[in-house]
Image (cartoon, rainbow, N blue to C red; front, side, top):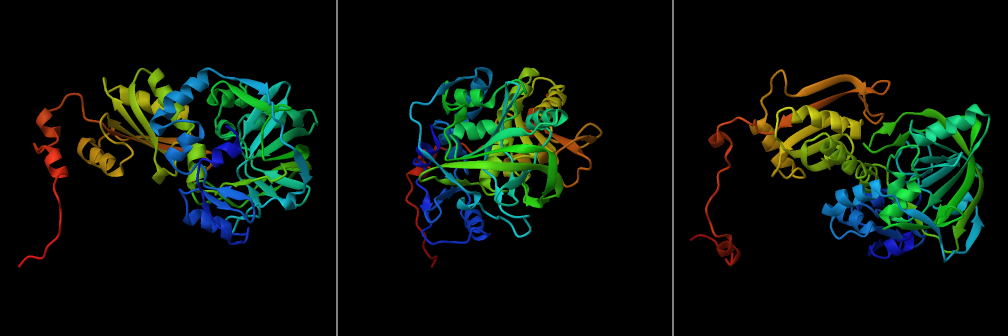
Length: 426
């Protein structure tokens, strides 16, 4: 499903008025977070992955509950790339023709935030998403974290070479999700996207169909300040010296639609976090624990707080959950483990489980200090932070009556047939 086909399923709110690209459109996207919004004055759309049901729709699922098995099937059975039959006409434009937003008050400037950056070196391809700060008409700078692109770029630098890249905007949802997924360096994210598509991904000269393609190169011998920038937590990330992207050419469809992604919005949290959920689930399952559900909680910004329900068979399961969760998502800071039957998406149920089931002593909670953490955690120093696991499962040996939930015997259908009305008492 290409970008156009997908957004036509969304029925977005149309904002006919022309608002400023600096702050105003970002403010409207924030006010309407959770609802797709289209600005025809700029051919700009945002909030297109902003609820679980919308996210599920983007890969053809009827219900978000299908996400984990769907993802894992694709993860272990990559698809193939095929030549596209229909090749859209593209025109040359300049960076100033793009409705690039300035989002927050202290942001360093205009940022592209919805890209799928594609780099290939020595027959190894990486597709990843990076915030890109526009410096001028011909240069930008982008944040590169220490993952596959970082390795590829440093290999080019070691040989005194620039790294050619294609920055694609308005890509198929499968590619957008693949770009947010961390794979093995030997694996191709486009082949993973093909699996998410059902087996095949049409490409044009090795690239997915895109609304906009920025062709350029990461310069091996030039850096510039990148930041401040509001990241997923809503806090400003620090200023760093990052590689310069030299812009050589920009191609766009005749009537291109620009995808804007609001930093710290639902789109950001879901695209960044939801590909981690199946990975965590799979790691726990492979450890031998009967895992039921995994949830990256929004009050952890969809990234730093992981809630897991299990069918506990041994008290040793808790340590396995800790190790497996960190292996699948080292950025997590808070881990809460509950019994099956707890709705881990319901904060009240989770807090009740902690209150009733947790015995705080030398073994619970488990606290890890000075371990690899997230650069998005403001309390982490030199990428070292702390982690806590709270075991909110019932002990395997307990008096049943101490934990049994009280129930009122009642035929609920009788209540559902009641006609309720309010009246004043005499």
